[in-house]
Length: 345
Image 1: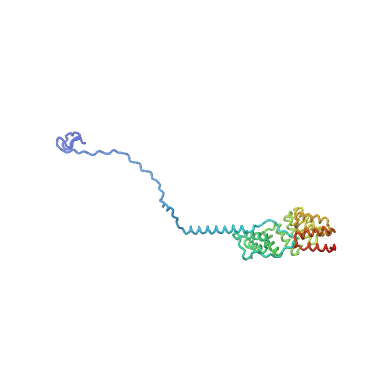
Image 2: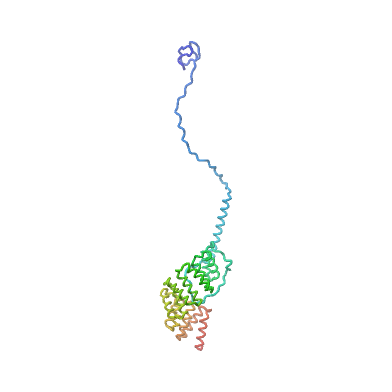
């Protein structure tokens, strides 16, 4: 409130609305608001861009996602079929070399499944075909095995073992010329593998090309001097050439490497009989029988040795044992009959 009247200058009393001297109205100014410091501006906040919230409980449709889902289902079905096929297919035995038995090799084998309709194993790779071929070979289906090995070599012509496997199947089918061509491809790829050279010798021997066979077995032994089988095959070829003592030496090396090699003992006994060393022959053949008492060939040769030694009753017993083991094996039956005729029985 002003202390004096603005009109006459007379002093004013507090709370008066008019001047007591002149009656002029007293003008009262409004109270001023107290001053306060301004607020600090709020710090700027980095606000993330708005992302629309997905609708809940409502699947969205996407064509690429649908195609991906269908593809996964198809792949799972294929895997299930492959696994089922694996359980239904005999597992192959990939180990071991081919043994050249004294038993005649069958020249043909009818496949249980036509090769033109054979299912592609696994994903159809060279390895899958090789595995299938090995299983067929082990089951005695040599035509089917040949088809599978041909597929393997076509898909991967640089795998020596596939060419060697193909040659084995051809040999079992009596196609030794072709077998040599294929094993030569294996040798060209892997010239330091003893088994390939030894198999080549087996095929050459089957063609009566004994000198070439002997050379191949020699290469095999040079590559692996500790291969009992290569020494054994060399012995067989030396026997074919009439070099019986050299053959006997080869069998002895084979046996020294693998003492329980039945075939080596058998052929050692047979060769000793050829050399008229009957006592030694009998010892060798008895060793073969001890290793495999259910081999009719062993018992038949024992009968021949005993007959050479004029031990006829024992010879008859040996022939009869061979016949009991394998009634389809004609040699002991004929030997027994001839011996009975000589004995006048």
